[in-house]
Image 1 (spheres, rainbow, N blue to C red):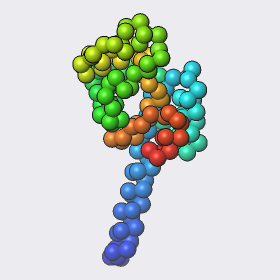
Image 2: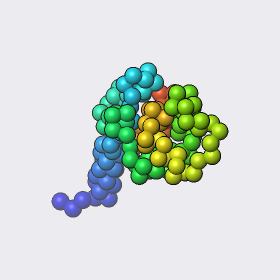
Image 3: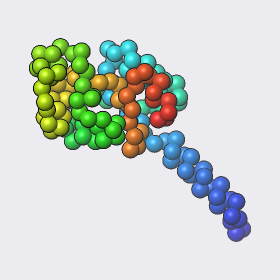
Image 4: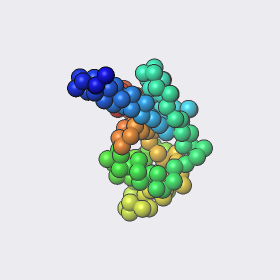
Length: 137
């Protein structure tokens, strides 16, 4: 049987839907953070089992942070948690940092990283508020 135009298009759409639905989702997660827990629950309630990265246990490399910042469309200092003790102890509010220096600080002090970060493909979003991630899923 020769495939018809409609059957070929239908098969291509089905493959596209499967690829889109199975695209992996990662969450940079801190289980002690209520917003992070709420975001993870929203993802799981959407039928997705994300890769959970406990970034305080395994801080992202500087290269990984550069990629996250690009996907988020943010500068390194925008990703810093300004209320953290380490932010205040290091006097970061008054310091001018290069991009490289700021990324190195995020790597060395992962508590500074705003959370949760959810990544899907070439896009990422902060789960603050948690509902932000719904548009990404």
